Amino acid sequence: MILEDGFSRRFHYLRLSLTEACNFRCTYCLPDGYRPAGRKSFLTVDEIRRVVHGFAELGVKKIRLTGGEPSMRRDLPAIIETVANTAGIEKVAMTTNGYRLKERAAQWYDAGLRDLNVSIDSLDPRQFQLITGENKLAEILDGIEAAQAAGYHRIKVNSVLLKNLNDHELSQFLFWIKGQPIQLRLIELMQTGEMDARFQKHHQSGLPIKKRLLREGWLQQPKGQTDGPAEVFSHPDYLGQIGLIMPYSKDFCASCNRLRVSAVGKLHLCLFGEEGVALRDLLQDDSQHTELQTRILEGLTHKRETHFLHQGNSGVTPHLASIGG
Image (tube, rainbow, N blue to C red; front, side):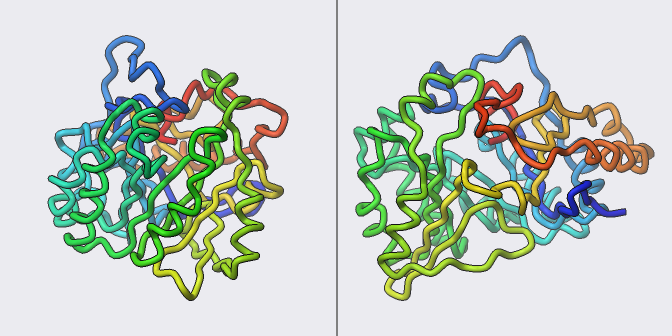
């Protein structure tokens, strides 16, 4: 049994959301902060162990822990250790806003975390606060240094491209990564149900940046089996790299290798689309393992060839925090 859809795409990468909650108020995601609709119970460590085991036996090799903000989980070290010790899982990664990175980077590393994505949408402290609602840029930069000292070899920094907010900062970012092994990932703003107006105002295509990089001698790198959707560029004069995530580019979905499980235990075949396939009822006992895998495989038969963002259709996704971005 392998995870393969009707378009011959194989899935080796699972994004697992640990919580919908976040302590930042980013303008493109949760500008009013996290507001739960009633009390929610997120996946327990045992439920996480079972779902990761199920996917690992079906060929998943990389797990990315996401949110919301995953560091809001007090049991995060136990979760990391559980995932890292699952047979078949070769890489455990996490995306974080960096709020607790300085104090906990070493603890997470010791638990088995090896790859970090840290969200930094501006290197200007005032602009950073304007975008995120938090005056924490200096602390997060200190956290990256702490993570490097703890042993994380290449840290990725996520920056959402926002027209008229941070689209003038590319040169500053390039100067920053010239002397250190950071992969800067520039992500096009994506349309979601609650963000239509902001999308129209702030969407910035990554294509002009790609053209500039190629003009300036950057070389596109081949993708690995568990790599995400970024087009990655390296330059002989830079220790750092640039990654471009452009969901509106031609054939973006052709190389899709990722599935998602939300913090409440639903399998999502695409960041934009359907309501999700419920898995949590099959995560209550180890004896449900085969039934869980059968449901995952059946759910995958419904994966579509592409999203419909080009038509302005973002499906039922209200905001990126709802299913882990």
